[in-house]
Image (cartoon, rainbow, N blue to C red; front, side, top):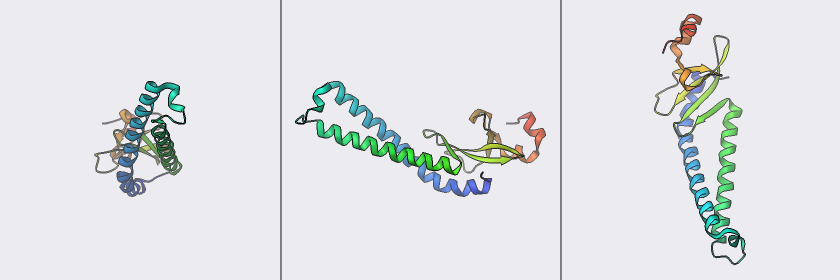
Length: 146
């Protein structure tokens, strides 16, 4: 469980990490497209030991496997910390937290200065509320101000 202060400190490093993860996803897409193009063009011929594009296919396959592994490890590491990467494209990140006796997500999105929102675990970005609502107690929570 994260406090707002702890999540804010961790967020500083995530501001650098999220773009790196996003770049890996973009590169994975490009590698996948190139592998698909090679396979569609050459078919089973691409597997021949003397095929001119076989080395390219092997290099792309190695890159795909390496990037996939690094991405999975990075995301799994964050999940082990209680951090959920919801959307790399928009830079949407949630931190498990306890507010008013309820487990919730502290919610941050790229472009926001700080962590200023939370939402229930069963909700999502659309149900997020300002942290100020949590400070006002259960009545504000029940009425869900935006």
